[in-house]
Image (cartoon, rainbow, N blue to C red):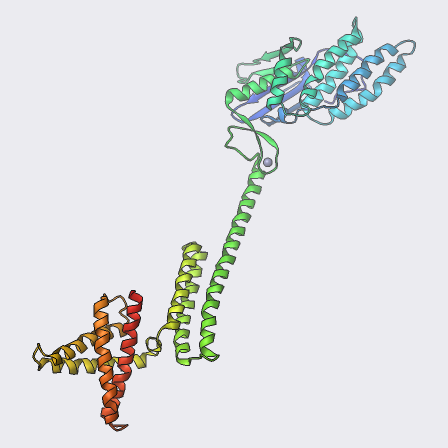
Length: 462
Ligand SMILES: [Zn+2]
């Protein structure tokens, strides 16, 4: 049923706004109709109504009309003045009321119950008061009462503190007629019915929400207000929850991308760190192809492990900070390799040759020491070589964790250095190509490697 704003005749029955709240479903139902029809609608779902909608809890207050410019009052004044234009021509009265009727019809179409109710009540009172003594004054009083909340809520929503203060000042005017209905036994909800003012309805609404512990929240996504069970709820609807989820996903991806970029950047820096050093060994005045080959194989191993660790970071199995710390260790490693003697780095063939020569020296020395008295300097010399060879062999085997003390390393170094001196002293006594010469040559090479390893171990132990 649509209200007719061109009607010139009063109808029976007042138009009321009936409100009922459903705490469980978190909804409000507003019915605007003539008194008896409103009752019929709520009790038997019949009756002609102007409005009957069930909306999310809080909607009436959230979308409540605001009127800072007092447009409603201006139009109300025009209606009052039209009363004085009845004589001599009745037509003039309707002519004056016509723009107001148009304004009210436009307002009515907003489909907001607070606005629709005010529009209907305005026209109803206009038709009613005309027949009363002092009708113009009564009309003014009634409309002022009706429009007051629109001005109160021009800048603030009804639940906001600033409004509450204004509301508490006006609520006790005593002029606002209100009823509470409990229509039927099966009707579990009370209905508040407003006739002349919506202020008691607002007051009742706020009181109920407070009693239930509900609050008004501003949606984090769309910025709209909504009634919520607690401050914990930050999103107004499923639509906004979906938007939030998409946004959260986007932010997550963004962070993952940034983390991925950082990962590649760190890895590239370490790669370049190694590569620059490798290039120096391959080209330039300090080129050392043997060392370059050795570092290349360490580099390959580093790259293989770096790729594996990057994968672990991407899968979230390793923290980016751990990866970064590991790269720093690897940079230290290439620095160490760069200053290390070539012996340690050279191929396994050379190392196994050195091992063989050292083992031979060790066994010969052991055999010799067995024939010597333990208190002679010759015994101490040969026994020292046995012990030092064992240390060197252990280092060649890569047993870097072997717990050699500083003293052991120092003694071994001295013994092998002595052995090297003697081998260098005798090698020239043999002709090139003879087995004795080859033996001394291999021994010298092996001792040099052994000394380099012991020296390195000693430096690292510092
Ligand atoms: Zn929202």
